[in-house]
Image (cartoon, rainbow, N blue to C red; front, side, top):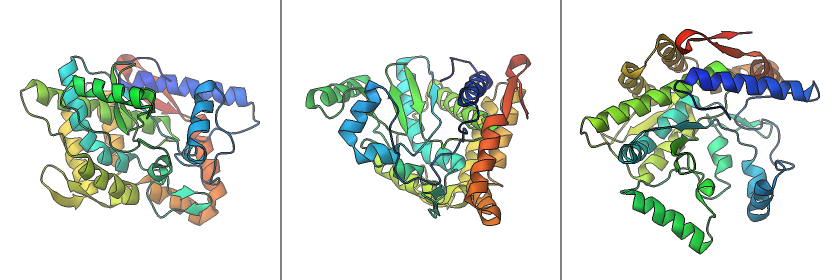
Length: 323
């Protein structure tokens, strides 16, 4: 986990350092691979040590071992003012399929091509309370849900609400959990910057007196499936206009809207890197690697990028990649 930073570059620098520490601890006995779904296994042989994970394994059994093969990158976004935070959360939910499509990077699972741009959401669905969370009219509604979970025994607290975009009372943030894990930390910075600018964009609209849309969960869920199926190369429903459009076009429009909220040259470059993913989607690139040299080559290449790509923050958070 990174520390708290005003810009993505600082958080990603923490991620780079964390990966280096893991590689050093492994000491060549195993490799660190930043993939969003395990490309070979179909069940996790063991869960992580610790009382929390032991309870999860005891309670969810097979599902814990299945969902444990999915890996994402989570972003916590701080939004000052409780009313603004709730309005931004409600609206941000509807944009999660666009983010999922942009970040999709998991076509392979259990030694096979799943046919999807990302199989990770379907692995996560083995556990309850996944996918799209509800919109909340007031903070009292949030409190009522948490109280109901504790009273009924359905879930212990907010940490077991595993939605892809959720309010995190423990940190006072919006936690976005939808992006697939990425091998390259520079790609992590690009996705983090997209989300950061999206939140600034929504917050600015709220502050200007606009009513932010809070789309129905069933509509967002339909787009969630479309994003997992085809990534940026498919179609999504434009929930504001209620018509189907190319995912690429919707993402281009979104990036055009949020780029004005970039606060540095580094953020502008990170947004341009995110835009370039539209021309070279990761599922397409991964399939080309496997077709050329097999699944083992994909794992090795991903491990090389995970272990050796880095990010060094410069003045005003400007970052660059070194090998």
